[in-house]
View 1 (cartoon, helix red, strand yellow):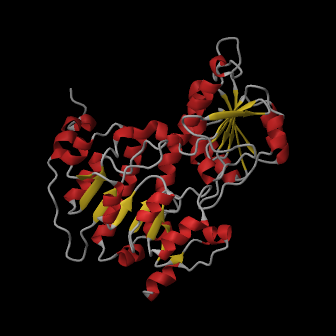
View 2 (cartoon, rainbow, N blue to C red):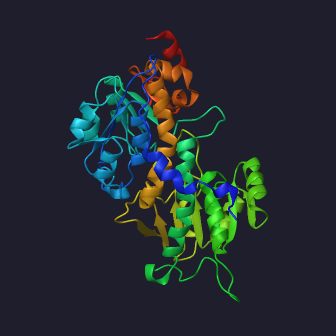
View 3 (cartoon, rainbow, N blue to C red):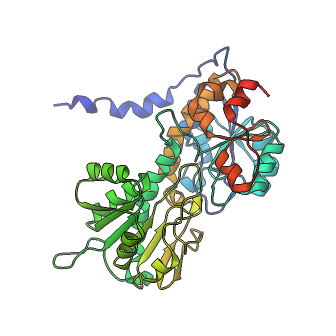
Length: 406
């Protein structure tokens, strides 16, 4: 007997390959979208999967994809070409011939030089590493910059941040489990223990999306999970979704100090939306932890939330301080590059299509609250108060700029 809910699943690939180009609405605009190969060797993700390219081409847009852009996520150039993309030999050509650039990491210094006047750039900003030099360069060129960290829909959600944070939360526990092993000079213990041997203590700092998915994964391993946060409502919601299998506590100095002394794993997941993450764990607290225990600070792209953390790379991911193993790779989802690319594609493509459906970028920002919230540089002005405060740069309100038509 067929299960009705499963009928037709096998048709998905066939339907996708039969997409037809839709003429761009007379009020809309045909975009030339550039997808450059990421410049950082540690970045394996690409901003759009071939399926996303096919959707954009079907909506009447051109897509230029840098040669080898999808290799790190196991997408071949031929897959992009079959989806309708034009494969471009150099990054310079991608930037020079596109009016909208979509990439994962923020532009490097060399890439920033390639940005064109009045170009639209959609990428991460990496608040922990961005600089006033980069912001000034985008301002001077009149670039419209939209940051993954800032794109917030009308329901208050951060869709791109959420997708990446779900991946980071799950990966943080997998990473911690590996570095607890004896082969990595860890404590030589399993997260879940076995019959007659108690499980490991996993302390998660932050009850947001990263904390939730880290807790889900740690519970799946069978670990004893403690989640600390300063938001009682977030802790209450986490207990509601995950049950009383987790222990929750307010992130006071007393509870933090006590939890870290007995922790085998600490997951740093404290964030402040659109701003640098707060430091909640001091070096003194880290020094009180047991030798061979593991810290995974998932907030390194936002500056980190543990005082002893520092950025590391996929090729050299850990260091020891006070006998504690620290993992601080800022772009953790890069190690799940294919999954992360699909996640990015699912969120980014509708936004790009909405930009194309508007008569101009100005109209797109006015009509779409997510795009408007995501804008940090517009018409030669910084538009994010958090960045202005961080670097002492004047800023203008984005809504006033759009309304004034300056």
